[in-house]
Each structure stands twice: as structure tokens, then as C-alpha cells.
Length: 410
Image 1 (cartoon, one colour):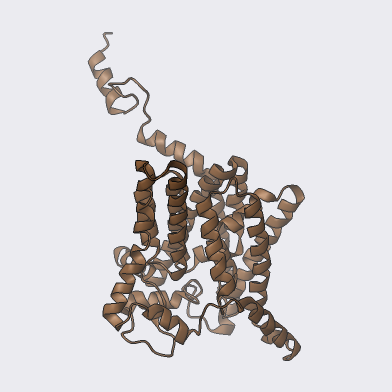
Image 2 (tube, rainbow, N blue to C red; image 1 turned 120 degrees about the horizontal axis):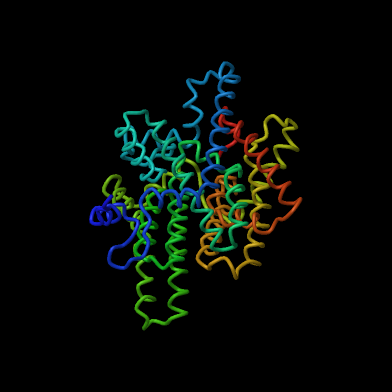
């Protein structure tokens, strides 16, 4: 039987198995996807398992407690707390004036814009749209965590980092209508882009992130730190070192765009911060954590009723201890952790310990992800096993109080 060599060559070229000019092997789409999936199978499996378990837990909570607290539906749990404000912005937009009450002006716009877009594209409710965005964002963030930790500490620690990241109590935000579902993957993506000297991509991701929330402004000094390292190492005359300035130049774009909108909408570019100050009585003070401690002592010592204690206060104080330990370990590991990651964590930590009403909660701790991931690097053996068991137990316990009622903020 005679072989049609021309037909064989054509099929080989169409299958993209080889490059006809160089002769080097090239993987087809299915092979590339297979390699990508094999590389990311661990974060996908761990993240999916924890989300399914948490969703099932939420269903049980709704069935058990829904009768007593008169919840409207299961989706109410996912849209609890700040989720209500994001959905309100997606539904009716922003208030025109700044008042002394809580208003939608206290929240940045990007997450609500994404909710509106997904809700109309998929013909679903705003709560479901926000839940989808946060869930997908959490998966992307988990994959990025593995890649980042692998670059810093190797594959073994990367696997541990993924497990800790998914079981950390703050990861409940990936199963709620909360903007960290897009903020954290944007920051992680920016950090990865900075580490690979993709300055334009890093600047774009940072610029988008600063339209998500005020804590996203910490990416600006992060980009500046990366540019500083390049300029100090290679000098001003190096073209690529100068190109690194693109990232910090683009990083405040989202915040500037939002401030411009607020200026035209309300008459002041600082409307969001004024709304936070007047409506939520939020401010930055070095006495924030001592104030939290005094409030806890007052509630325990004077009210003499544990049921009236604001549970967010002891959780914030425990978070402060966790933060101090994590920062100390990050400093000891500064040779493996890039300066830009350390700078980002320091600025995020500053916001946590100086915020009058938002102490280092699990949500903010996981946003400052290097301070969480360092525990996967430092803990070994039984200490690591105990850490995972305790973290996993707190993950479900605190989620119950967050989903049901108004006991614990994310």
C-alpha cells in the first residue's frame, strides 16, 4: 500500500505537533491544557473541595436557623454584610449627596459594575452574579498563590500555602458578595507581573485594582517598591529599569477615575472617604487597637454578660497577634520574599492596626496574603498539622456566625 506522504505532512502541520520551519515540537491546545491542568490540579481540587463543603454548610445553616431568624432565602447569607451595599450600587447606583448616615458612597465601584455586567449577561440575580464573581476570583487567586509560593519557597511549600489559603477563615469572602473576590486576584496578578518584569501588565492590573476599594491603594507603594529595586540595581540609564516606572504610573488610575466621577457626581473627589467618616465613623488612629482592647474589657467587666460582647473585637485582637507573628517571620524571610510583597504587606498591616472599627479580621489578613502564607513556610511537622486542623475548624465555625445573623463580620 502506497503512503501519501504529502497528506501525512499536512496532517502533522494541522495538528500543531511540530513547527514546520524549526522542526521543534509544539504542543497542541489539548496538550497545553492538559499540562496546565496537571500543574494546577492541586489548587483546583483543594479550592473546589472547600467551596463545596462551605456551600453545603451554608445550606444546612439555612435549614436549621432559617426558621428562627426569618431569613428570606439562602442567597441572603451570601449577600450578607457589605454585600447588600454592593448589590444596591449595582441596582440603583450612587447617592447624589453626602449625609451623616451610611450611604453607598462609602464603597468603590468596580465590583458592583462587574455584578451588574454578569447579572445581565447570565440573566441571573445580583446576588448570584456577585457570588459567581467571588467564587471564580477565589479560584484564580488560589492558582496564583501556588505559583507565587513556588517562586518564593519551592513546590512543597506551595502546596501547603494553597491548603492554608483555602482553609483560612478569611477565605469565606470567596463565597460571599465581597469585593475581595476580585481585589485579591488582581493584587496577586500584579505581584506576579512585577516579579517577571511585565511592567505594563502590572500597571494595568494595579490600576484596575484601585477601583475596587480603598485598601487597594496599597498596590501603589508596592509598584513603587518594585521600580525602586530595578532602578537601584541597574541604574537610571538602563532602558528596562526606566520602563519599570510604568507600573506605579498606571497604578492609581482606578482611584483617580472614581474620584473624578465623585467630583462630578457629588461636588467633591473625597466623597467616599467623607461618607465612611460620617456614616460609619471610620478614621485612622494609632490608638485603634488599644481602643479595641478597652472596649473588650468594658464589655466583659461592666456588662457582665458574655452574650452582649461584640465578637468582632476579640477576633480582631487575636488577628493582631497573628499579624505580629506573621510580620516577624516575613522579616526573617526577607531574602526570599520580594521587597514589593513586603511593602504591600506593611501598608496593609498599617491600615488594619490603625482603623478605628476594622481591626485585623480574617478578611483583611487574607487580603494581606503574604502574612498568611509565611505560616506555611515556617511551620513544620506537628505544628503544621495542628495549624491546619485549628484553621479548618475556625473556617467553618466563624463562617456559621458570619452567614447567620449579624454576629461576626467577614
